[in-house]
Amino acid sequence: MTPDCGLVGEIRPSPNFNARRDPAVPTLLILHYTGMGSGEAAVRWLADPASEVSCHYVVHEDGRIVQMVREAERAWHAGQGSWQGLRDLNSQSIGIEIVNPGHAGGCPDFCEPQIEAVMRLATDIVVRHRIRPERVLGHSDVAPARKQDPGEKFPWDRLHAAGIGHLVPPARICDGPCLREGDEGAGVAAFQRSLAAYGYEVAPTGRFDGATLHATAAFQRHFRRARVDGVADVSTVETLAALLAGLAGLGAPGSGRVAATA
Image (cartoon, rainbow, N blue to C red; front, side, top):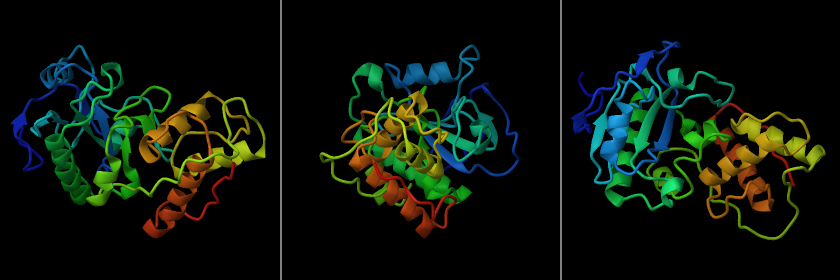
């Protein structure tokens, strides 16, 4: 196995992969945290056939980059999920695991050398595969009910400043009308349509159900990190509207759709 990227410092092959079911080049980049006590433990787990999980790359705290699966192969990192109607996310994506204990370990900050390495690696991947900005995602974006990674401590703003991903300045948090779990009506359905227009798997039922709660929290973890509570407050709704408006400038699917107001 030879590295796909010149930034790779070590190869640790994982047997946990198969052929991509869609032969097209990857169209998504999905970022994770390992959620384990050490980077070495994470690499061993990702290389263990019994785990049935893997990734393409692991980025250690000191910035070392390990490749575990060739980019041409389907690594088993995303699991069940959806984005913009896509279902087989493993076939459509490249996965980067970032060494960090995550929520179970108290959500420590990511290390500076690590973030610098992630930015360099992500830049290399999105350029080579022409991955669209709005398709650089967290695991929680594509699997909101199951996952929280890479979490609200992950500095998406720094990646965006480096030209990676889609982001807008989050609207200021303030008092005002909001939508929360159990609410019903046209406003809820409009908000659900906006989440779905951006890519989240949410049906416009008009009832703020569990799926809407999880998707809202996932949206906040990525795009409005100051408060993650699953409540569609004014700040959340306005930030979502700005992101949807920004898709028009990217020429992306979903652009031109009207966002909800709470």
